[in-house]
Length: 198
Image (cartoon, rainbow, N blue to C red; front, side, top):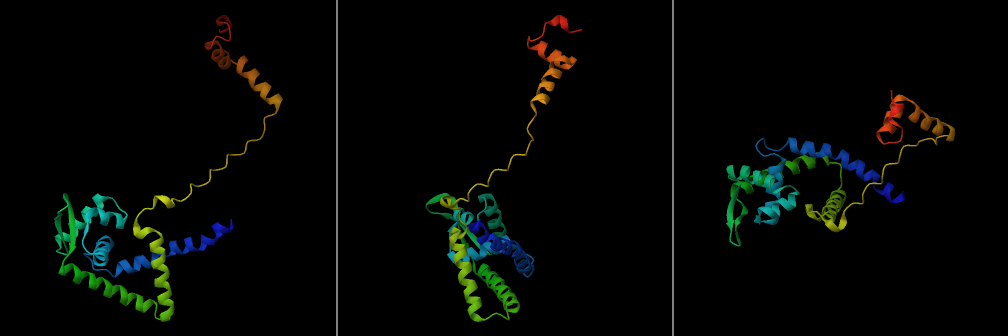
């Protein structure tokens, strides 16, 4: 129980963090939604990469990643080149226009954070950055870690049923063989002579 209580408040804070993300999304340019911003950020951080690698970092299906890439390519923010090692794959590259867009995203985000965290000290901001970086690394930077699967939830408790009194059980058996429905059911299995059915 102590191990569970240790993380309960953290879970509650994660739920409340959605308000922060929503406000961050509201300040983004109209033509650059959160999925596009995530792709630009990852390409800016890691450089050129395969579509499959980007899907891993985003933790989404390859088809979703392909739609993001097509959207960004239409706007000239990324380019897609054939992979020399695998002609079926594509290498994604951040263009100068994409870099400009990414810089604008960072400008808006940092301005919002500077306003909201104006009463924080530099040490507090640095500590938060350090802890969030460590948290991200603990989850493998978005990649699933088969060795750290969460334990299955405990089984649901069975509903409580009061014990049946022997006399009540005896009456149920008697009714099952004496009522018309009960007689027919037993006759079907050869337990009652057919002539008893009228």
